[in-house]
Length: 237
Ligand SMILES: Nc1ncnc2c1ncn2[C@@H]1O[C@H](COP(=O)(O)OP(=O)(O)O)[C@@H](O)[C@H]1O
Ligand SMILES: [Mg+2]
Image (cartoon, rainbow, N blue to C red):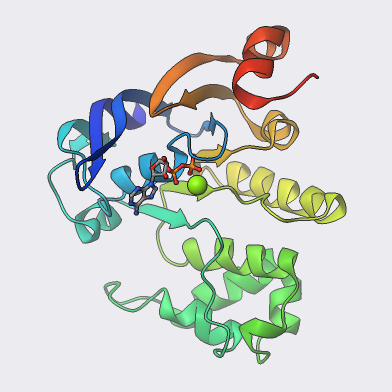
């Protein structure tokens, strides 16, 4: 079963044509990476899937159901969640308030159980639950962004550059978190520029450039392809 099937989408910002016939798929329980440089179209791809910047053409299926023409709340109802680039934590709200906001609009959420689940996965967030978002470190903010995204039933998680701006030691923590999400059977599409991070957690890899897929393959074929890494990711110099 495919958790996500994107076929031939074209996405525009006004008259600016950003995604050109983009296709990719994410099998259930896999972690698929969408790699590419700044401006390649990773965020636009994620926003297209979530219905935030809907594609003008093409098909997007989540667990077999077409969502390309539908709004974000319908995509959300299919169990798709986003960890946005830059985290978007409310700085003046507490950790717990940030978590609870994610449950607004969900049908009869078990607030207590969901909150406990988040603190069990991220004990540091439990310790900081009354602290304001603005007091957290970069790594803690990323954990909160992930914890918030998976409040309530989550089947497909779209993560937009979780490694951005994090020190190597913190990255190792986020890597562990991603492994744990996989262990919980959450299917993940991970947009990244950090190849090393992606290789640690990914099952399959796409490279996007200028809004189109220019490479797809498994870990060993990506690792072996020096030309592709150099040309599209600037790695290996
Ligand atoms: N809101 C926007 N309006 C117009 N152009 C945008 C907007 N957001 C991104 N773009 C353009 O779309 C292209 C892809 O951007 P983006 O999807 O953010 O890339 P990435 O996430 O890979 O860095 C870039 O050329 C960028 O300048
Ligand atoms: Mg981006």
